[in-house]
Length: 243
Image 1 (cartoon, rainbow, N blue to C red):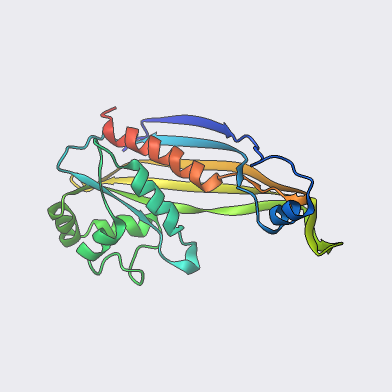
Image 2 (tube, rainbow, N blue to C red):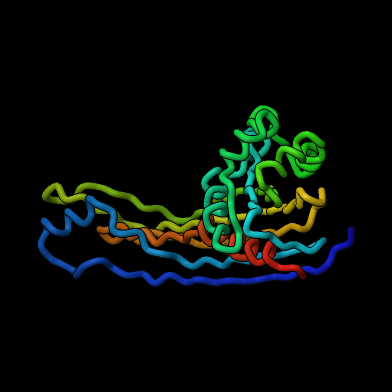
């Protein structure tokens, strides 16, 4: 199989910091605000998706896909909430989705944590088993999507210190920032034809920070959520397209 084409999609979202409520001078209200964290604000995130297609795709109304993630903790387990996020968001009127747990139960024991594939090569060997391939077709699954990757904190600077000031009022001072980096790759397999039809990679980078002048104000970059949305949108388009 030859590589068909590669496409890059870049999405940037900048959250706007908004302070809930109005500034007040009374110590009691200041203490209340300091004691409870304000609503989490959104930071800036840049998400990039790369697509490599190796064969045509298409899915009918009676076919479904399953999104699976690496299960071995010692070899870099893919976060369950990320797999669940992609599974939820990729589904729609044109793409039916079977849950990962329902699929694992239906194909026991092939994808149980103790026996699940460790990497893409193992995954290819597993789904090539005739009995498993037949079982997957029986339950109406056309495509398997295997996701590897994780979100990590790549850097952190600054500090925020909290203390009690006069009158027993809690207060925090300082500035803390950190960067999160999400990297995920989804390999797509066509069970009906027994071939690998392509892969999509999603990378999202964002900086979060907490300025604190009495009241800490978390401004959080939703990096993993952005990577999930970017990958889900591209995956839905990938599966629904014949090109």
